[in-house]
Length: 116
Ligand SMILES: [Zn+2]
Image 1 (cartoon, rainbow, N blue to C red):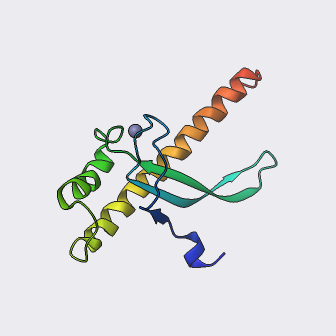
Image 2: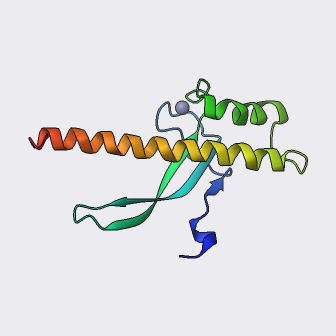
């Protein structure tokens, strides 16, 4: 895998609807995420996170990014550096959150199978 392929990809055009509230999403980030399969082998894949005005309004990791969209309206050469910085910070938090959610789901699944 090249370095470019491992970098997060941010999509701000044709962003899908928010899966949580079905409002139009502001931004979709696709980032590399690897996990271990049942054989314990590392699997490389991608995770996606969607930025939503409503659902992420109270998320500390998203507030600065949402403010940038609200105040500046859209990306311009002047705010591109700030956008990149805020988006990277948000993606980092979103990536961790996905992992935690997945771990929790795994725990629940193991509990159901009587392994815990
Ligand atoms: Zn939403």
